[in-house]
Amino acid sequence: MVLSVIAGLAGSSAAVTAEISGPRSHSPDELVEAKSRPISDRAVTFRSGRPRGAGRLSGSFLSKTATSTTKRDSALDTAKSRIQKQTDPFAKFDNLREKGGAFTAPGAADTIDQDAASVRSELSDLGIGFSGWTLNTFVNNELGNAARSTIASQQYVGQNPTFSTVNSMIVTYDLARFGIPDGQIVLGAEHQYWTWKSAGPDRLGLNAVSYYQTFFDRKIELKVGYLRNQHEFAGAGDKVFGPSSKMLFQAGMSNNWAPTPALNLKYNFDHRLYNKFSIQRSLSPAGQYAHVSENPIGLNWSTRDAGILLLDELSYRSKPTPGVLETWLRAGAGFNNSSFTDLEHPTQATAKANSVYYVAADRQFWQSAGHGSASRGMYGGFSAMYAPPDLNRASQYYELRLYAKGLFDSRPTDQMSVVINNTIWSHFAVDAALAKEQLAHRDSTAISALYTAHLAPGIYTTVGLTYINHPTSITYTPQTGHALNILVSTSVFFLRLQVCA
Image 1 (cartoon, helix red, strand yellow):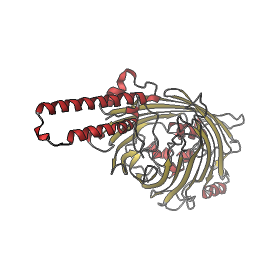
Image 2 (tube, helix red, strand yellow; image 1 turned 90 degrees about the vertical axis):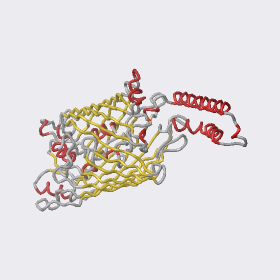
Image 3 (cartoon, rainbow, N blue to C red; image 1 turned 180 degrees about the vertical axis):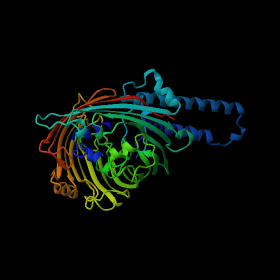
Image 4 (cartoon, one colour; image 1 turned 45 degrees about the vertical axis):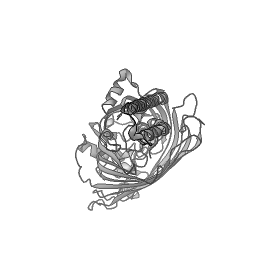
């Protein structure tokens, strides 16, 4: 999630413009339980069985038997606890992080405080979890002939030195202790500040308010509330490498900066194949900047001209294990009945039939740690997106990416990427600009290289370069030129307290 934000700032030609921005795996607990089950089952059978002559057994004998069985159960529990601690002392926190999304932030072991003074453990015993992180980013165009401007007339991230800080907090409460399958309540807040307001704008408000539970042995997952569908669809929050298109936000998808009311249903055909559907209140059709400006706290039910966005995604995801490479395929579509400006006929009434379509694939093709962490290795992927050019300024987006996780044994948690993307602008919007005798381009291409170093538990630093041939969207001036953005960013995760039933 956080690293995808960094990458978006560095390279996406759509992201850097004001106009576009305007199955469950088994836990260590379950594995230990599975290992101990045959012994436990035999103990239960002994206790519940009734051999011949049982009616003549004395109370003293039954008492001794019960005492022996209790001691055996106690010994099993002690052994289970010891094995769990040897396996991962933070498992009780990590197994119950925020649920329902395709991506979760680093766990308790990867925070600057970990379980200092046992505060995390004390809160987890109450069923309370807490997480926090801060992301601070600096971007600047290094080309000597780049056209500088006043901040008020800045057109893209990095045209002037651009700094941003995003600070988030999430609190979770476990409902499984009350018999609700996987039940969880989430409450989150976010603060952000930008030197270039069009990239933000500044806000202090809601990040998430949600309720989650499962049905029919986790066949169906329900999540409802003020959601960030950025973490639910297309893998936008999970792809932590390289730039990411803002076309889904243009279509109305909610995100960290702009959560909206939504109901998500996920049907798991098995532990790899699933379909996810969402009914979501759309972002403002005037763009994310207009949405946040009108609703900075995020509690408003709707914004001006915003309607309903329907999202559906079919996905296949095979997670990596030693000797088995990761594969993630997804395809989806969104339909929005908000009132969008008709770019083909701008003087006519607004249209209410916008849509977006996407496909994406990522494949691990080499594991660098044969019997170690299966996720380490080399990956490749692509994305393709389309939206009707009469209602969307960005009409097509294509991306190729090559990335690595833990490529070097000496740096097993570092990440690096090389990404190429191309955004094609609406030909209606381009033709309208040319008719006004403005300079306009029909597409924008970016090439980025990023390296993220894991410096210490909970601390990451990213450095990178991105070349963009047309850094503005559609219109430009003779002085605009190209951009070579340098990016430096630091992410710090702290107070990662997770729910433990």
